[in-house]
Length: 105
Image 1 (cartoon, rainbow, N blue to C red):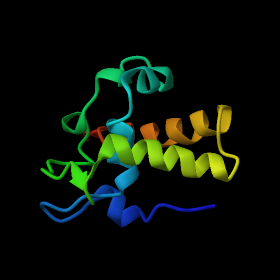
Image 2: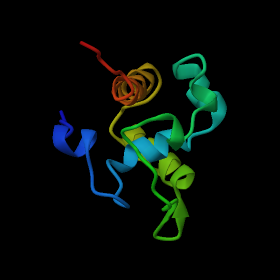
Image 3: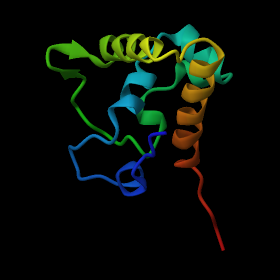
């Protein structure tokens, strides 16, 4: 099991990206995202505080959407597909959503 480093999830330097999987997930096809949560299909990086405002969308000549497909393929190599993939991606969505919560005294 891979654990996300909490500090890197909740904060990162300006112009630095947090975990690439968040950007990849947000660049996934709308239908894939909408299947995770109703209303998630139309979300962008601007929808979530944890990912922040970063101009980088291309890494090593490939877009986040390209990298998402590559990540999905790699996960399938390890048997993570179908419902398991759905559960994993849904958990990542929940992390993003939790970052938007605010608490008042």
